[in-house]
Length: 282
Length: 280
Image (cartoon, rainbow over all chains, first blue to last red):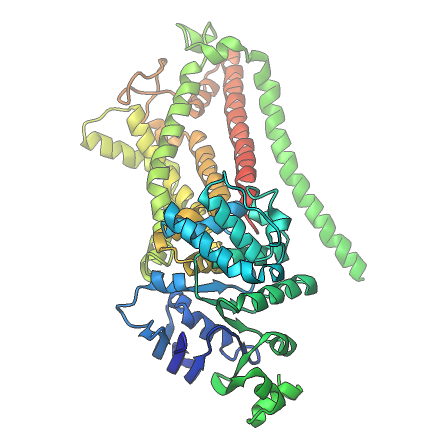
């Protein structure tokens, strides 16, 4: 069963409907790209999946969003548990006003993980990483220091997982605001990973970055899909082609077409999809 | 033509900047030139002795200490009230209508002349049978400083990007955790500035404490004793016909100026220090 299924999802701001009757399953363990022109509801759809949409008072959600079979808009659903399961990466990285270290420990700390839970997390992480260790940046041949606290180890693991460790290991307690924007985005990734999610949502995660930083993020995403379900909003078609396994195409608040990336790009069924891919509409 | 336009507006800017600077320099010059000659150590550490106001021995330690007591007491009290109000006015906690009404009320209070607070404080004190005292002065000053502090902190909080809060929420933080651990830290430089802005306004105010704090030659030993203050020390001394005492008024003003200057510099330094972790 897929983690995430949308059923007749309609979202409006006041009287204006920004998304109409969306029903789609998002496949597990893959990168799903949500594409479409600006203002078509991509970001709204994404923010619906971890209920960040709740912060916008005017927004009204109808229909169902099922994650692991439970409707996340059910009043009984615990929103904090949901957000722990579904991590989020915003368009522009916003480092929390604290050190690099504290940015990452923020999640584990507020969720009150004790040292045994931290150690379990680290063990799981290393199992996750080590079989294909060489494919993850900087992980090869490293002996983790033993005398540090569990949190130190955890933070190191997540920074490695986000491909940032080598660049920041000497200034973990320095302010996160001093990092370059590309590094900040990878810090945001490490921070999102540190809450232990199963799903990662990313809202145009490379649009504020230079090409090289963007490439690094894409690369990390491709590595992460082994263990996570990723949903990426993008308006860059070429990025969707490079990364996506599955594509959802929205146009004017409507779900036009969705399917495996190869099929979507080589033989689109809808005229609007064809027009969008060929660049006739944007 | 466009070049002319450019230089015209540039000239206008230079003019206004130099006007402001000239006023500041003028104030400092007058006060230093008139006050410095009679400024000495005994002025700072002694209380007025008999005949001080006729030009004899003594100092204004009573007013210096009194002013510091009054304005730091009022700063603490305003902060205790103002900080929660400023946070509560954010849209996560309070509906738009109520917070707009509160803002309006605070703006009206901000604009209220300080003598009104003095008169109001006086009425309240009479009602409770209190006499002019440190406590009365602190309360009147708090009324004066509260709207300034609250509104300036609140403006800082409103400037915090929604995306930063979203980041915190998306990590599974609750409203309170987001407020205390993220928003508060992000706003800390601005909060510092707001606090010291209010302090500066409070320490220089004479009218609100005229009836409520009274004036005395002694340093107060309890909250219920009357207390002297620098603005009133300036006021009383400058009003005498004796030149030596008038000169001491300028010396008192100089001390007040130095305190305010020190506080401004301190606020700059602190907010720079607190800005270390913040992305603008």
